[in-house]
Image 1 (cartoon, rainbow, N blue to C red):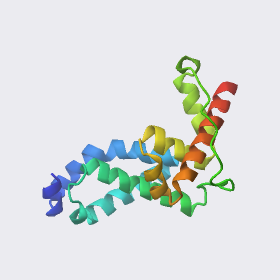
Image 2: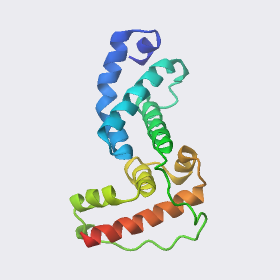
Image 3: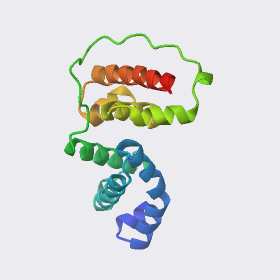
Image 4: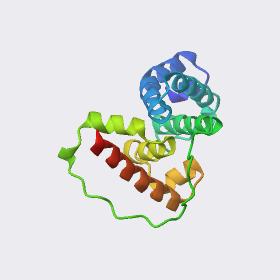
Length: 168
């Protein structure tokens, strides 16, 4: 399908869109949280992907390549709105040891509610690391921050999330 799409086959492009639209919408929603923004970014991402399809080299799956486009577009959208990383003043600060938590202490609904209450920058780090599975080096590249900043922001975000969830 990707090869046919590269050749301009609109039916193949429509099929690719159908295969990936729901998953990519979920990625955009986790990062943006506003449905209309996620829909806009999703459409822009697909347009960009189909325009740049000739650069896709099968070094990864099409889904992984598209997901990277969606994530980058989502982050650029947030940067444009000046919502990303409101506070980075303690860059490079040593990271405290993880607090030990029992899985049974937290219900998934409480965690989702807690995530929604996190500041935007913290939510971005948690989403990229825990949900999307990126490591801190990749997050640093995506967000144009240092690896140590990614790690310290992740640990602060996790600590804040634990605090919010305990209060729920």
